[in-house]
Amino acid sequence: MASNFERMIGLAGKVFSAHNDPTQLDVDEVVMEKLEHLHPATLSDYDEGDGPVVWILLIPTTIELMNQFVAGDISETALLNNTPVNIKYQALYLCSALVLPEYRHKGLATKVGLEAIHKIRADHPIEYLFTWSFSKEGAALAQLAAKTERLKLLERPSRIKE
Image 1 (cartoon, helix red, strand yellow):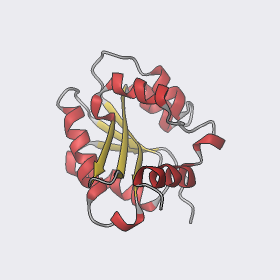
Image 2: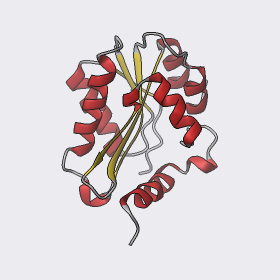
Image 3: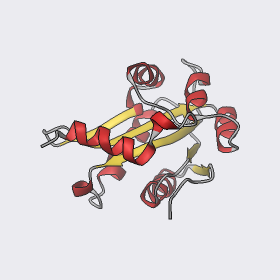
Image 4: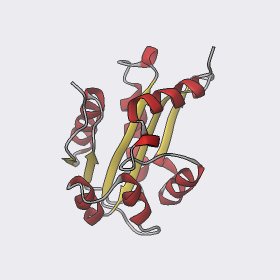
């Protein structure tokens, strides 16, 4: 049987297919290092001891870059690469939220996501949350997080498959 880590990698490939879509961020060691430089809470997970069952990826950035991304003028990769380091960020991109099937509908993604947002907001004056939803659940998480945290929510036209 595959480990939770292997299952999460498989789920990410199935949901996002980032390897085949240049508009999406393809998370590898280099990307993870860039994210860590922006803030340690950009990559958050929930692990019950057998590997991660929830992964949340957030990208803090500027309002200007947020607006360019929401308008479709830049890709996720450009958003990350153009985000300056060592400044105060006002916007937060909910890039991805993955949950293994047997752990869904238990509030874990909400818990992990809100904890990560709190950690980032402790260091940055975040006013906006923005998203590019791939699922109804992801869109719902963004709406709940924005409402709970009293953030303005902006959405790039979704890629939800009906």
